[in-house]
Amino acid sequence: MQEQHYEGLKNLPLLTKENSLIKSNSGFLANFYEPELRLEGVYKNDFYVSENYFESKDLKSEWKTFFIKIGVNQSIGLQRIKSKRRDNLVEREYFNEVCSEAKQKATSENYHPHLVGEYNDVTFNKITYSELADNYLFSLLFWNEVFKSVIPNKINKDAYLHWGYFGSTWSVKNYFFWSLENSKFIPTTQKSCLKASEVYSNAIPQIFEIAGKYLPVFDYEGAVPPEWQTQLKFIPALGLNEYLQILGSIWRENSQDEQLQKENQKRIGLIYEKLALMNFHSSEREKIKEWANSNKLLAKNGTDFYYPKDLSIVTVEGFRVVSFWG
Image 1 (tube, rainbow, N blue to C red):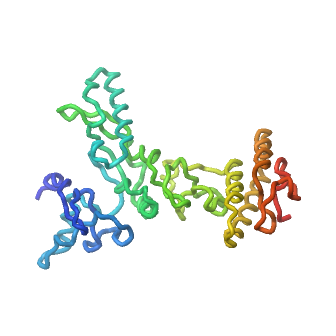
Image 2: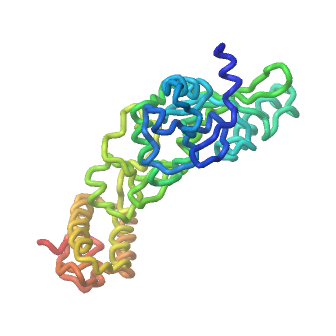
Image 3: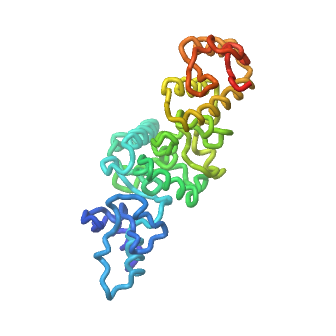
């Protein structure tokens, strides 16, 4: 069979292990077929190709090769696809934006803008199964695999919106880069997935000790590869607002969990150390005073909270009290 014949089978309906029918390019090899990534058992989803295709006289490797050639996935990596808005494979907002981008180009050149609409096909890059990475547990595995296999600076910046009857296209923003800015698929320490711009970098010094569960930090233990650091626009640092937010959250929660109380004592100490090193603008000192009038701080005993004016040690102007460990 010629390669172009396999290409024509990439929408072939395949049976899953749970007896559903899905397009071949949406399927994943079950562990039975020995994929590169043994995802089954780690992530529950109805997209694993059924073992019923295999018969005793067959070679498992031949089925594996055939499935891969018609688009079934065996790992998480980069893919180049042609899709339209109604396929619901990526966010509809992407098609809205690239349609607008293409229409502006067509209008400025007075070149058939009426043939550009939200339902045109677009050829773009995406990461396999990125549409499932809004699931926290899957997103943990997803990014671990992405960092191993995808190099963003080697990916074309452009996608192509198709229009007319003769293969005409307009270049538009590639979904891959659009998704890094707009998709809610970054796992956080709060067990939710958010946009990268809403998540604190895991490279901030002492971020996990300071933020705890009170701020959404990228839930990844390793170092983000250098080629990804400029692509994922994480929040790069903590400032006064974050420190006050954490202190206020600890007070409002008023947890009775002894282990958490001990962790919070250490957390508060670290925050006070950071605050003591900061050179506050007059507006920031006013913000601290205003905060201190309506928020309480944890006392040295680790269980009681008091307004700062009722506590005894003063080390940062505006707080009147910043540390209880002197």
